[in-house]
Length: 149
Image (tube, rainbow, N blue to C red; front, side, top):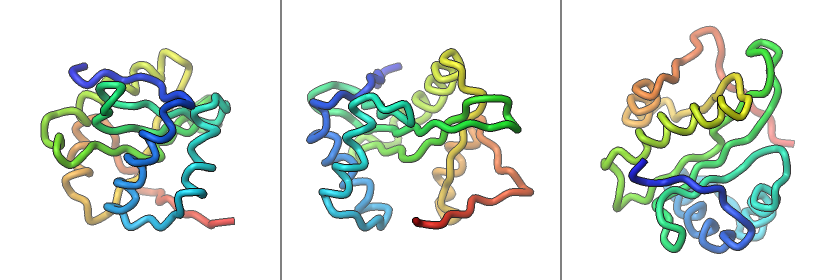
């Protein structure tokens, strides 16, 4: 992969905070920095519920992907959810996300995952095409529904 992946560690938190703030600004997600830090820190400290991969050079990552873990009877075991994926605007269109979405599922499958899910904005046709090319398929009978607690 031209944009190598590495698991983010606690010392990456400040660098990651900037990337996540960039994604949230683009996506219209409102979250104050303290909430963001509290949500990210446990993932970097090794909780079993998910992980963060930084994309590219350690000192200046090109982006990140956050995977959260769950359990699916339907898929026969542990599954994952691409919670967030972000590539810096200046380096988009270079195939980084395509490479990521080809390599990451293979690595996760080797680690025991049975399925990987994601959600995409219904109006974001560019992202939909990317995910379709990477082998993700819409589930016609299902839609993601959420309730904030």
